[in-house]
Length: 63
Image (cartoon, rainbow, N blue to C red; front, side):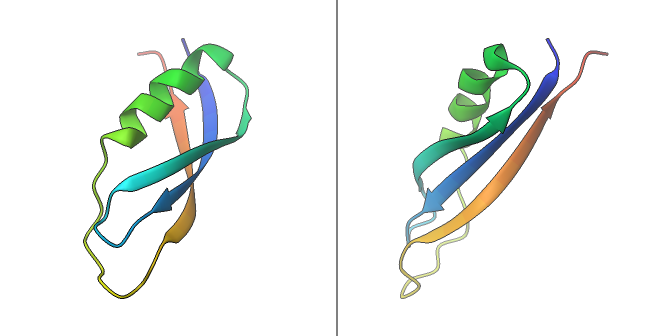
């Protein structure tokens, strides 16, 4: 399995990913794997900043 998944994420003040939206992909089988991985990510806590959004690209490659 190989391909690219681009996701838009929202992170709350505690650094937890609260929302994940698919932006684009060329590997439908990779989408759920990418979302499951991103759900586990934790960012540095930034109290007072509110919710922050960003875009992430995850590439799947065969070795």
